[in-house]
Image (cartoon, rainbow, N blue to C red; front, side, top):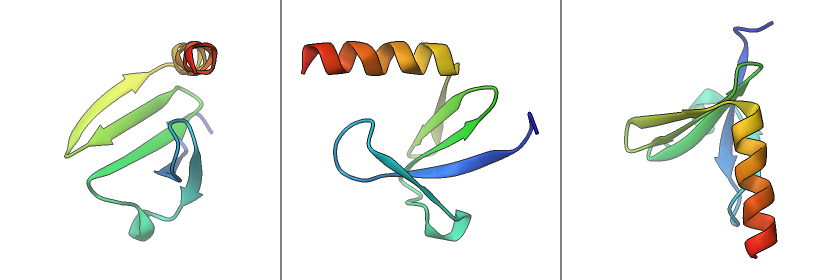
Length: 65
């Protein structure tokens, strides 16, 4: 299960995503999520965060907003 992942597509606001099939992802920007963490892809470049790091960034975003 640790190697399984899902594709996520942004739904508007930052940190607002939905699960999509590979064929339905936006090739310019999408995310993958797994038990190991989240990888955010923008124009082919990937940035990996552990789930703890991503949750911390989300919490900070909510506080700033």
